[in-house]
Length: 340
Length: 79
Image (tube, each protein chain N blue to C red):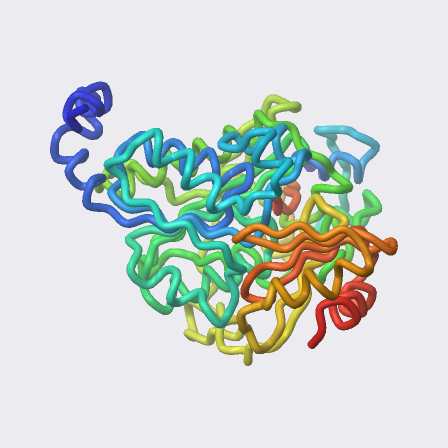
């Protein structure tokens, strides 16, 4: 299969043409979060012939993801495969010309700069504002353009952050990070798949425009609600006192990294990331935990269920603790079953 | 003076599910005060992200003028 034939329809489109297609083939894009938004973005950019895609996701696939996360199958869910790996496997069969790098990890202050530094563009598929604050700061620091996208219930929003001198950054749009619990979650608000498809498609369209140098790149905030039949474009001004884009203070990025816990959107789960990341000894843990309940291991994770406790442990020591109400309960299980 | 309000997505739940309404507000009323009349505390309400006046994101302290249109946006968080 020749590239020229594959991309014939979009090369014919005057907005892209031969020159635009060449730029796409040379572009490097990092998609952080390969859930509902990220799978649609990755699918479209892969089919469009973006030369390099880095797919970053900390999570594994569950049955409840299948309603909207378009690259995954029932088998992926039954095996609890990591999202980044499953997405990369699928896309490598769609377009073998694209170089795809899956990364199963949490994007956090210790690794975000490494994840984004060699990319031309970052696309947001994450489910929390903490990571978006980090992406915003890292992208501003390294002058890398990024596209925000978020969706819940029947509504969503997207905006480009282009690192232009007079343009706002995400912190101008959202001056303070909401406290955990201070905004609805996927659990409480739900989500219908047309809105994730629409927001992801807008993000993809803006990505294609940015990467090909189109003049029509949007500089406005777009909110859409598919149940209320509305699309609203809003102007966002740069905050002259913004800590990030006015004063270059990167408070989230520069905060010392330590062990932390995070509630996972759409699940009754908490992620525990230990301060010292080191390879988990699956064999030793399997032998110990096997006396307490059912243990299944693959090269991607160890699953434990028993004694009223359920969790998944990744090879780097990161764990997802299921069916717990709060961080304290999650940390207790981590300490008792996995160890410090 | 009359001000037109539009509530986007989840913010409709703050005004009994109404997508649009018109409110008579006093002179020199700020965006925050006008929403307060509707029972919305912009500083603590989970669903509230920001308000736009005439399609531009606004400071809560902005004083409304006759004919202004206020749109209230939720936080779009999920991915």
